[in-house]
Length: 401
Image (cartoon, rainbow, N blue to C red; front, side, top):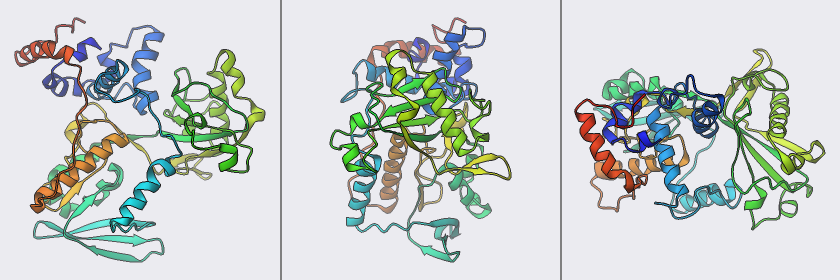
């Protein structure tokens, strides 16, 4: 990590962007513990990225930010923070209400299928409703805030001719990181924060929700009155066989996924915590509906995959401002300072899209504030030396392997 922390931005983008995290940490040939903690833990459990393909620059940048937060530098609170209410109540519903008051109209169950252009600008979008009818949407300005795998379906020959950079998005990679929730009839305060099950084949991470919802009483406010805690779990590896059925998650039915994850959770707990997850305390579970089982194909599909920052993928990602003067992009695939598939990255891209639109429109409105990740100033001098070495074609001083 010191080698990365002392690397200048030019080296991070010019060298480490094109190196996998696995190779950056020299994991091949190291001990199993080294590979598990330093190679896998920062990739699979946190961002569903496989260390063999994840960009060392992206993972290193996140490690840099986590390190600063852990030593309470550049942050305004604890390094590990979660919502204090269910996501809809704390986040989604208030924003929907606020935007509705501002005049925003939400159209649900509508799929944008194509964009139309004339004179070098986007003139309209075609959207299909749930009943199969198609609607043309005319507008002056267009912000495409879809995931990468959806947005790139709109880049047909006519749109690509206006901005050839958009075609690079077809090279972006997605993987699966989806969740399952377990509803428990007993309290299970395993730890005050996130749990990482580093030995789990499916790269599980989890969080006990009830302890953070201090404004709510779970039995009183939700469900049938018997649920006392909720264990939310992310599954980051869908391709490795599990311990119960010997199959990867992508080839398990919904019931098998629930049973397999439960077994891996119990296997990963030690000491007094092991007794907190009892079979007789499991009320029910809920798997992300984006995961759909096909009985005919004996496998799952995923309607909401996650963008993976593979080595070299920065070159494939667009900025919020396209070469089409009235088309702007927002999403975690857009180039941002928070260079990771997170809501923070998506939020930053939305701010960038708004600012680009205001600039294009010649608006005098205040621009959205854009933040940068905090960098520990203790390494500034080392980075200046590294910049000189990089420009001279020399390796980082700590790159001695």
